[in-house]
Image (cartoon, rainbow, N blue to C red):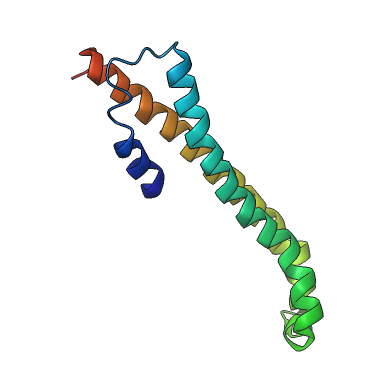
Length: 114
């Protein structure tokens, strides 16, 4: 999230006198959310395709027994879904925070919020 806020700092000049209904505001939101989406996609991609790669390249690790399950089945059956929900929750939370931060900066630049 800090990275997204730093990029907002770089575009702070663009938010001066920016109308929330404007194309410029929409473009700024979409650009920032695209970056956020790509980061979360990369994490999800690693989660989704990491397990088959671990099974192929490190079969000893994948077949290690943990609580009666092999590590790969434990990850696939138990850990995968909560991890996916965490990625989704993180994306939604950060996306809303990003939009709120840009709107707040825009309102401050117009003198609406102190």
